[in-house]
Length: 273
Image 1 (cartoon, rainbow, N blue to C red):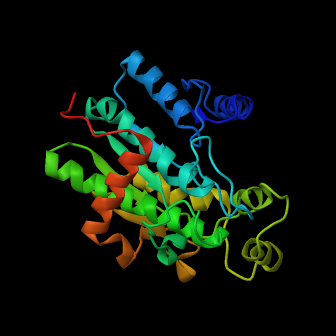
Image 2: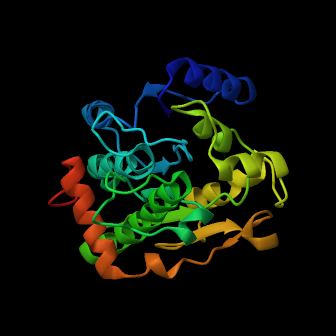
């Protein structure tokens, strides 16, 4: 269990063991907003040497009202939602490729449909910061990472399945926790959603289903993208989700991957281990 706050991770571990007493769980700390923490966590797993069957990239932050930077100087949403998970994924590829049927499942968002990758200003340094557009860019980047990893795996003949998902409109603290970071005030868009709740929404159990499907279903396919199949794609059972055309440009996808390698200092393994 990869967690940023060990105390919360231990509580979650206790809850799982209460229901599944024979589960074997190891709680380890990793902060995706700190590349040194990502490297330390990944190195610890590599030293263990155990093949890794599944990596689920689910951590994220949503719409802090003011621009905040990670330890490495990235805009917080781009750093936590995309660059951190990207660095972790690439660092763990040797362990994944040592497994029998490895899989990487990455959580995107319906907000990716409204995202744009601005290579001239990925970190929102040269324009007015927008909480919602920055979030949308980071989640589009996650969807692009899913597809580009699938392409790379096919090109190199890796037996690695890369899938993606979005949770629809799920009631969790994501929309409120991020909105209170920094200045303590919420962004307008998040405040409206929180107060009005005019959109159909669902509980966390249903919202988790698409990612669980992407992570475990034998019917999931390379670059498959799964989400809620009900009203407006916001609620309901899992179905195949539409991929925005902005994630279908192979030139842009390859460029973003290369830029992420440059920013994070990680690179693809030369060969499978």
